[in-house]
View 1: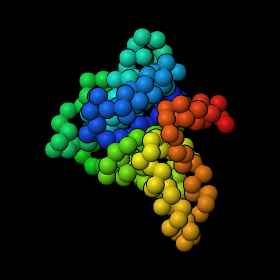
View 2: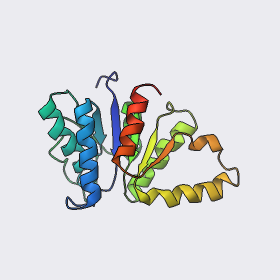
View 3: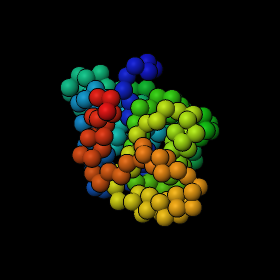
View 4: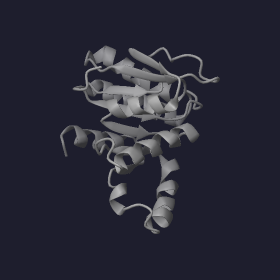
Length: 191
């Protein structure tokens, strides 16, 4: 995969169904990215990963922008197959190698609602930026789920000086996909 392409990783729950509002939002977000010619990377599974991959594919095929849908899967008992909306797929045995691949390919990370796996992906990304193992990329937390976590981080570890205020500079709370798209556009322009 050529790194000259701009890529957005979208993390989120495998358990969210198609009729859920957040599924529809992630689908629309990925559709916009496909229209912009931006590649989307997910874990390649069901739920919000399917929403992102299918949204990207629906627009990229229609508008012929060349945007690609990438799935980096992990062997898990509950997630047996990749979703069917992927151009490029790769499967991993361990989370660590998979997460490192996400980081090497991504220019921005969007963290949609999710559980333990999604939180792991968020915190891993954030830690790698903090210790400068990867460049400082925007980490966009989409939806209300994340606001109380950021509030807790500010009131506890930050207040106790377990991290620096600057560590939060690249973490953005986005209430909706419009907020996400603004940050993505700004980043692509170099701002």
